Image (cartoon, rainbow, N blue to C red; front, side):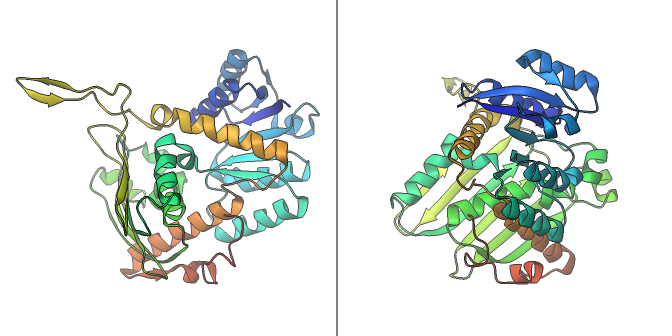
Length: 345
């Protein structure tokens, strides 16, 4: 089976997903939609696709699935429309910036029995997957603490900041999902601190550029997240998991993994410059997994519910910063954040 794709949005992340689709022998990019004609035409010509409107893709019989890379405030509406049209949906995070809207969207997905996968690509990174495999095989015993360092090489423009939903919903949300993925338990309590150390304009826009978060489960396991919008040395992505019998870590990756030793000491090449190159393999594996879910008609993972939980953690972190205290996730969701409530992990 070849899964025929429509790409909604031809911006930076749209290009990344177009490349993943184009490199997969079980996928074909059929159509691209974007109000910026030049961007849509560039991707369409590169991969032999057509430029169509979203409304046309919605009713196209030669489209099996769509990848939603449009602005965040359009995600939930598009998910609902394509779910009702019988298309499988891959949507970039977040589903929406409002918890209630995400819940309503998930209800439509459930009612239509649609396939929905949310784009938490880091679960598919081979290095992070190897960390998870070591945990699952019992090599480090019971997980006790997780440390996640995620720092961007530079801050985005202020106009992006204003519509992003803030650092916790836009950036840390990936780390919230990874913390759940590695801890193996739902988060009960969130404590966060955040400040503006990189660009005063980010503070003026109502956001932060530097954040530290502590997550705790009901059993006492911890995850610590360190975020910054500035890492002068490259795209900093590290994970360490400490357990009862040992530890496992994933180090930073480089385009070329060599080390030079001479009279000046030991040197290594720079890190990847950003997510487009650092997570190339993760994006390819992510689309491959989505295709498998579409073919098997089985529930996709990460699911809409995974997106909901990550957003709840982001909201809890923001509340913690504003109120200067630890915040129970149940204050955000209205219920205890356990597996009996949040199905579909």
